[in-house]
Length: 555
Ligand code: GTP
Ligand code: MG
Image (cartoon, rainbow, N blue to C red; front, side, top):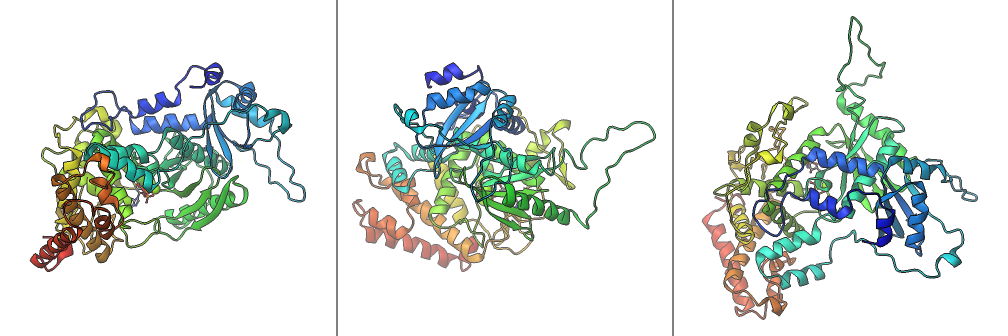
């Protein structure tokens, strides 16, 4: 920690402590239970949101004296924490101890005069810092430490995986390298908070909350930022504090349906972001989608953002996934590996289509962990039985109730290793009867498919819906084929593993190589000849296909 920071900081939680506290849900290093108190999703969200409201984003000159910079800012009040990052320029994220400091800084900030161009005045928390006299400021600069916001290159990842001690170590390494860092998480909450400032121009009591992988503990560095514009504080859900014979209502405009209301709200917010939102570029209003949204890039943070509203169930799904991620430290390691594996083999894509989504893959891992003996994860129905009156949650008529206090759920007695679980995951889904069965995390049991989509994963809350309705037969077939190949590779690897020092892809590294062909050519130095390896592999796929004429559908 920089001594200056200590000097300027007020006593408070610093980044590392916060991270440690938040992650008290379990160590990624072991599969063992962790007995420290685990934080509720809402506690984490509220704390982060409040922190983001005291935080500013500053575009800095490339050469800047960190000490002077912090001294300058601390005139407005003590600073709790700060970090720098690079993204088409140098940026600083500065968290003050008090919200008033932000107002004080805004009060001495001017709107730039841009020569022939005109600026639309908007007092945001996203600033541009200029040097008054650059020559005397840059004299004795020590270099600024920048926090990294991107995931490791494939090359670095393979090196790290090849040097790992075991497959378990590989899965934990992958998790460590790809998970959102403390700084990246702060930047995500800050970006939501900056968008909230824009939306608040129309809806003063609104909240913009992150959901999806930014908060469900399965986010990878570089993942999109899903935002939910929450108008409930203003809207119809506010408790009515009335007495006597009178009831006051606001005069409002009525529209034909909730969907039309959502479209109208998003249309106007999309317009605001496009016209006045500092740093918001490439705004697209996708209002006719099943779930209407505004998509844009937040240039300064580099996040691709999807803003929705009236999407409270998705926020509840994020909470549920967060709970599952926190219950056992093996869950996140396994989900990250399966997600990376799927991405490496183009089973998932950032473009919408007939591909399986990360959300569906996560549900499959959860389901698989519910099926272990003894189960590693409880069913959603069981989590519902643990709920108390305060946990009760009905959204749009759907019962979304489950226990929210993680500490009330007994840890699993299952001690299987990650290596075994990964192998079994591929075997399980390589042989799953997709033709007749549905995946259902509510009951943790295979159910008969209610409809004929190739892949059926029941939506945990809107139980009549299939979260993987988009997946085509050929994409499912590809998933099954790759799962079988991967199970086979892991099985072989177990018998014939190169020395960690040999720098050859093995274990998870071998699985992540883009194709089996690549995999074979890179493993040439292994004892078993490549031709034999691939022949066995093809035979094993062929024979399982021959046993069952509808190979995709398993048995
Ligand atoms: P990334 O691929 O890392 O962005 O994962 P993600 O979990 O954020 O997925 P995505 O951005 O596609 O969706 C955001 C959230 O919306 C998910 O976490 C879910 O809560 C919800 N969601 C996504 N797809 C579906 C779906 O098909 N059905 C339902 N009910 N919810 C979905
Ligand atoms: Mg997402």
